[in-house]
Length: 280
Image (cartoon, rainbow, N blue to C red; front, side):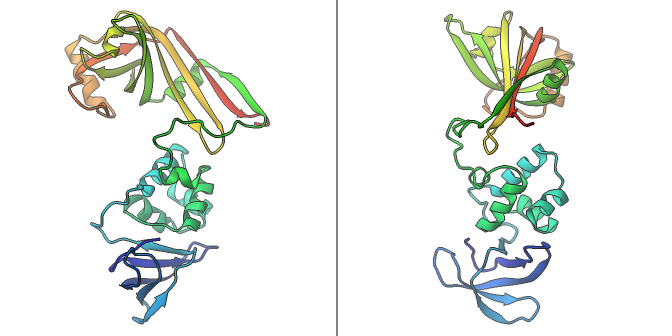
């Protein structure tokens, strides 16, 4: 836990999540912002020396520098991915919904105990919420003791493709060698569409049959799914269609640059697999 003068300490009841006390940090005892702190309590205006416990959180004032770990954003993304409301997640993590909302919207430095409860509520790990392993390939954890691999039907595959995301397209480049490239994609009228540059590796796939794959791995639970679409890729040449796709696109390409050429894949085959514990 790290703080600076002007931050607030909030102490909550670990059982109910109700705020018990709040105060402003008016003095530091270590240059790196670690405890203890001199805190002026809002209910008594008294200044006391505080060693924050596992039920304490530090709130940074608006305009404070962003936390390099971006913990709040990771929590919010994971919560929404699992279809949980603020209230549901806060209840599981035994904290107040107001504090969880603050954590997702503002730079904050939650305690290890708080992160542990959040990781448990979201079926993930503290390391994942802190952003550890972002430069490592996924799936380095151990396999399930009794995994079950099952095929997915077309409707479930279409549902997992959703409306947009990041997937990988497999093409054969102009040099004849195979290549797999990640792209930001949208789904429009049953087709997978994405933007690229005319001189890109992906552009060489126009007019050929390509493979497109999306997947999701749950590192904490050692399970996940993958969907594979196979079909012809083509350039989108209708100006009105290109305008409509650009207008409704969920994101610009993360790679940046001039990527205004739209391509589409019309799947002729849509298959998928899911790994779960055998008892599921």
